[in-house]
Image (cartoon, rainbow, N blue to C red; front, side, top):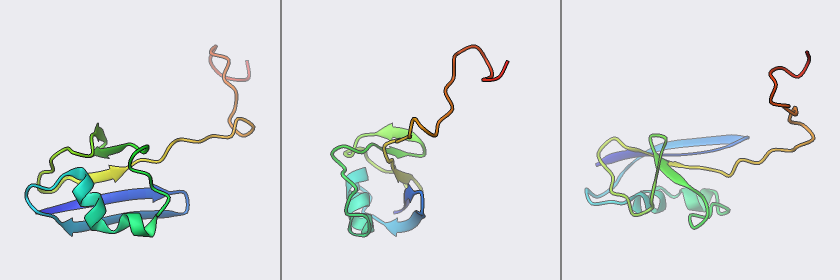
Length: 92
């Protein structure tokens, strides 16, 4: 069956379509895609994964046409993010 595998970084986005066996899991698809060789810093033990935006476990079964997504941790620099006081806009 055909499925998609997607991963995005600030400077590069990857979305590929691959063939996997009918009984493939999310982990199987990620490993078969070769994305772990392209991005060796991906750690499937700590990073979350999903199918069409819904979090799933690595052992989740796939269906034809699914899009497997590997999520990066959200990191923000407090120096560059405007502070919100919880009372609406910053300037009143």
